[in-house]
Image 1 (cartoon, rainbow, N blue to C red):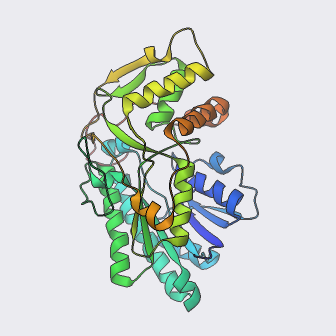
Image 2 (cartoon, helix red, strand yellow):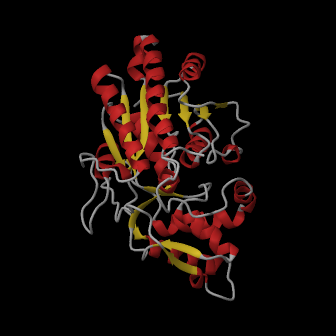
Image 3 (cartoon, rainbow, N blue to C red):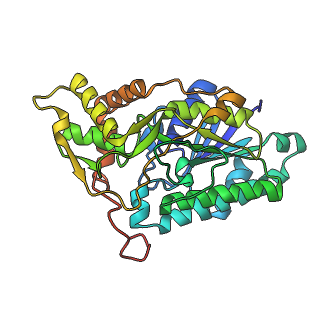
Length: 361
């Protein structure tokens, strides 16, 4: 088991990153250096509960900036890296893929090189213990039919600009291990949900649209299937992989919770009717809209390997995790109202190919 006291987290103000930062400081007393560019989805409010901790340092920086990344490693001397910084929303990648290429591919390369150069300077005991954990997605594998699961050896078949950029970053990480012997670990996770999720993903959009009395959009007929993973379960899995995983290995992290999108929406409506009842059922707000271009039909993760080899399995069921999530959004309007006061207002993205040739405006 690795002795990790000082950890560099990229993207630590994002949804999964902030959950990891909060958990590490509150539960594990690890020193955390959080590097985040604070783009639209990076929110300092998400780490406000630990921002005053002596174990926490925040640096606003772009992982694509090689000189800055080199200084970060030289100054803070981390024992390990958890690389979460990424552009992650499929619809945004359809409208403007350029940022996804820059952050997810160029940024990962830049961070890998800074970390590798730092690793070479370490004395042998610290070098042997150093780890670089790259956090990826199930979307790199493409889509499934009605049966089967994504395994660690499933061939990559990304179908969106987002998933293609993440697949490329996965390949870079693999190459740095096989070419340079750099001690990397890779995880591919299923759809995360939970508190503090930026309101562009399905679950927070549905909750906030329902609470606002607005139409709840469902792509196509709502039959697309996803495996749902509560974010705190994911955080515990990342820590387990970082401490016990074998360099060069990949671990699938899934919730064993397959749900159709329509089922997720109806379940949220049912929970809201219990916690925040109204005269009209929330399900009356459901509206079916034109499907996303290239919308993958089904994702399902086989998380047998991480259970068998590292002893991790999710603690939350979908119902228990979703209830916690809905309750959190009801009880924390200040957080999401601050988010919605910015540039994003729950509008539909990703309806067509970009008109600017892929450049972000």
